[in-house]
Amino acid sequence: MTTNGVTDHDVQSVSVSGINPALQTPRKSYAQTPKILDLPRLTEVQLRSFEWFKTSGLRELFDEITPIVSFNKNLELHFGDFYFGEPKYPETECRERDITYSAPLWVKIKLINRDTGEISEQEVFMGDFPLMTDKGTFIINGSERVVVSQLIRSPGVYFDADEDRTTGRLLSNAKLIPDRGAWMEFETKKNDYLTIKFNRKRTMPVTVLLRALAAVDDQLPDELSPIKTGESDEIMALFADIDDDENHPYIESSIKNEPVWDLKKNQTVAEAALIEFYRKMRPGDPPTLDNAREYLFSQLFDQRRYDLERVGRYKLNQRLGLDGNIPRSVRTVTKADVVAVVRRMIEINTGKASRDDIDHLGNR
Image (cartoon, rainbow, N blue to C red; front, side, top):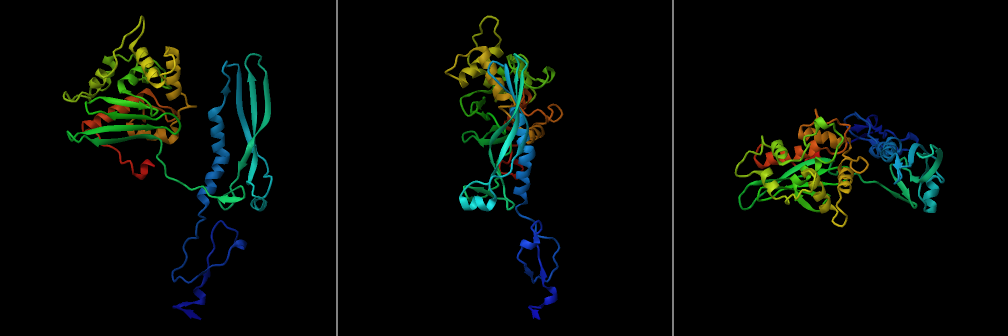
């Protein structure tokens, strides 16, 4: 028999890879061209992603928070190996009884008492962990749900510029976005000074933060740190090779917009800037030097609170030309990163560099 020039000999059964043939409905193909590739399993992305999360992803999460230390530093809680128990109910019963298809998650916990040296180990039930079915769905309260993939902005730094309606000049801005932690938003004002908005709160001249960074240690050795004293001469020297427009001196203008530093006895300008930064961020707390130093360190240099992720560090190094200076294992921001961001903003303002295409898929 012939149908539209295609004989029965040309009719073939098409199978979908990754699915049990016994469960498939045979599909007839009347195409005149031969089949080259099997149809892929379209849920493979979800299945592989969830399998990675169950094995490697959870391990990374536990490693990030281990150890948990008590306030007085005498107790430490360590998360060890973990495993999943058997699901309490099969998939079909979960659908019928309107319950969640899940498995118990158990973690080996070790508690260390630093005062006595005592170590206690125990397996702890962490909760019921929803499981993905073979179809790439979750059964939540008896209803099948699907996780929709979404393209979000990747961690890293992004540069843009707005045109000043009065002068026609491009005024750059930048966002330093971590995977977890405080955002830093930089902006160029019309009167040529640069500001930073930290954690979407108060705005201040960027040189206040640059000075304050001199009073806190990051994860790089001292010889790799571009900021050591926070003095005006040091700050100006960091940008002298690019901030050379006498009509638009960006760093000098930023310094002029700082508060007047009324230094106390034996107090450095870096310490005064650190306290000013803390006063801006935490106006209700007493602005002591120890509180300010601990706050800035925890916000930028503590990986438990600030994490660029591997992709964020890679993109930051590539965009700012820091690949040879900052190891990719450093996943917090560094002083060199902040200086490089400010330098790139000045280069965009002076036409020596270009802004980013925020909508480019490479930034997603």
